[in-house]
Length: 379
Ligand code: XIL
Image (tube, rainbow, N blue to C red; front, side, top):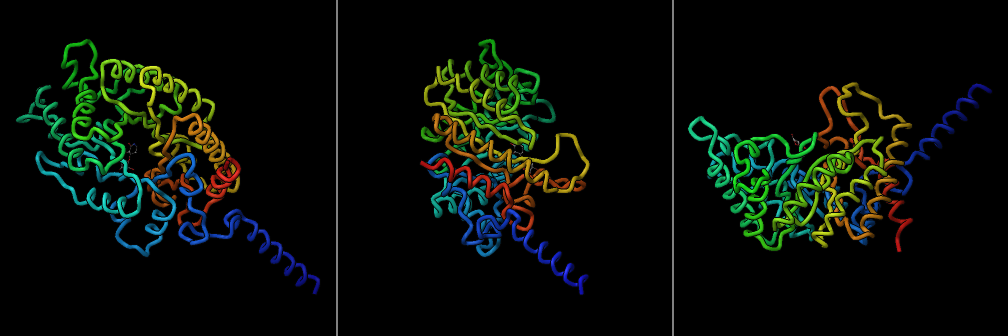
């Protein structure tokens, strides 16, 4: 009898413990639950909350992914389908289906749209750089680049709010990244710098849509002071030369150990560009918070301890974002993926847990934490 009583007691304790887990913090369990507070509504007074999606996420209005994205986000970007290889896989062969669908969805839902990206060294087809099997001339590369930018931006004039005009052009060791763009275009105008391919992309984009926000997007400029300085120097020179750069996109593929004071320092460095362009704006463009260090391929269980560490870091991060929004720098925070299951950080040998929603769409502790931060700072 005694054994049965203690067994019942143990089961009851276990049940009450489960009931106390954080996924029940706010009375909803899944990201698509009607009672789950919408993230973008919670942050309305500071910035938009967006996410990267794929066109097929828009196909089934009853699917968890559709309900989740339509509910929580008011800004969208394609994870892959607006890159150069998707839009113009071979010269003159433009594919518009995915972007057209995205534009319609954003218009219907009153959401803003980010275009990612008009120039990158990756997911860019080789034909941009070759001519009869040889390296193409600088003139030809610029002509193709300008044609791509003009055609795409003209088609979506007034529909895409922010363009990542160029992506990842800053090198990790200072200066510009070594790429086909840099190598083949070089110092085309002979003014002593090699920003020419970037400048041409921005100039063509501005001509095609005078009102779109034109961004330069990169990784680690929110984490590495030296990379932030390289970005600062490049953008400073281009702004002084009259290149129409409206803002800086901080990709923000960060980790649970990311230091938010370092991030503040990087934002301060780039904020100095306001001395040249007073209305320069920042966007967080590809936020995720992986639980592994780069290069660590071992798989870890998502333990309670990691979950708490992640929630605490998300709290610190969103407090920092609110601070930056109140200083007038930041007006958009976009997640790179929808749920832990929909993240590019997952590898076949290693599951990752970077997002606010779990693999099964459960509302993770960090989701509640991020909501709580908004509640605490509401004015
Ligand atoms: C990633 C996508 O998430 C993957 O699906 C794809 O295989 C590779 O590209 N920085 C960027 C994004 O600017 O375009 C990248 O997206 C992630 C890193």
